[in-house]
Length: 374
Image (cartoon, rainbow, N blue to C red; front, side, top):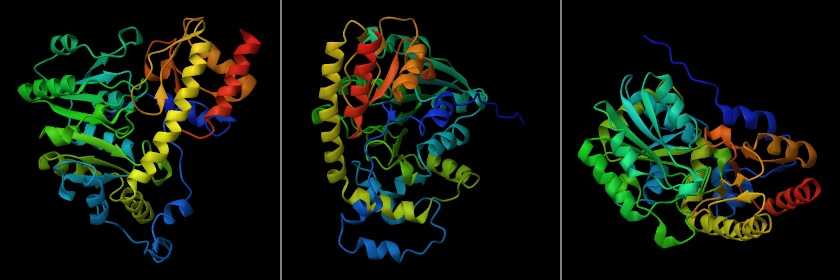
């Protein structure tokens, strides 16, 4: 049996070095989080119930109540269509090992979170990156997709709303994409961790699992809900064979998730609109600040304004790569941005995150740095 070989996870190694030392994390991909007491305050009696929680094993598929709450986020999806994981990362790892086989071909929407490419490639799959660029508004080229199809193509991997650009296609484009996948017999692994953070509600796409029987929708408590510390994600899919294969592989990873995380996730999802409305308000306020900053510094930066989510992917206009700029900013002001090479993107790009309440302080430090150095 071949040994899985993956390159070091560049973005996560970068965060391991800098995230908890930087004074201002201005590149975070998640939304403002909550204290446990804030979650418990959402519901009468929740504190007492949490204190009485037994800390035994949970069900491999996830607590039935939790799966019902997750299913309620979708149309036409039941608790039996949900499989719970210890974060989105585990779900990606399990899908790429349990469902996709060595020698098969994947088409992956890029730039992207590295594991969407690296796990399959490390497992012996062929991977073609469906690259997008700022100059084209981060839009996907369907002709490239059709030219890149192979007999061995097994799955299409997409990410809407997109990290790191905030791109969101039209519903017509998305539906045509799924029709093409159906005609080709592809699986569609759809990273939807920023769903519900569309700036205009009418732009929200259906989940892939809702409209395509071989759609595999990835969700997580970390991003839109701002609860990364719960380490809880899920797959929603109507194809029971896919869920069966993933569940069997999961027996060799976490087996089950943590009972406290499942309890708090269930509680949060019962009040998901309260949580989402708060995070949408934070994003809208911070996006106004970012928009003004970009306008005032248009000589130095360019960007395609995002359509959804708490991240954007601007470009420096004064260098071929953003690495030195990001390193100097961190050293002088304690402000952390993510250089574009961490996404295997154009090196002049960098990711900025605006889903947290302390965004303004970090942005003011960035403005001071620009005034002092440019």
